[in-house]
Length: 141
Ligand SMILES: [Fe+2]
Ligand SMILES: [Fe+2]
Image (cartoon, rainbow, N blue to C red; front, side, top):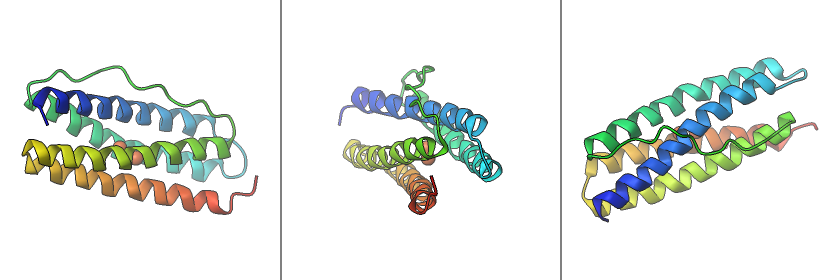
């Protein structure tokens, strides 16, 4: 794994985290109905984790000699609570897959600290996707 390729991939991950922050803030604002208080709180609580991931990635990209991106990946459009939860589930599953792949690339590159940090992020994203999947399991509408 060449250093520039690793920086480019980490920048893709950073664009994803910036998108996740915007996605959660936007969905928290848009959620409606009797579950709005819980859903808004749930979405907003995720922002803190995604912000930590974004900060870590930006710092690591600079440490490796790269320039962190400032443009987020597009946020998926969603109207209903269910569509928002489904979009969140898809994004969290994708993030888990991406960080699993990135951890093996970091291992190939020879940066053990980055491997460990990315594996921690796999754990965080897995927690997010499992929580969202359980909410969707008995979703009433
Ligand atoms: Fe994240
Ligand atoms: Fe997440």
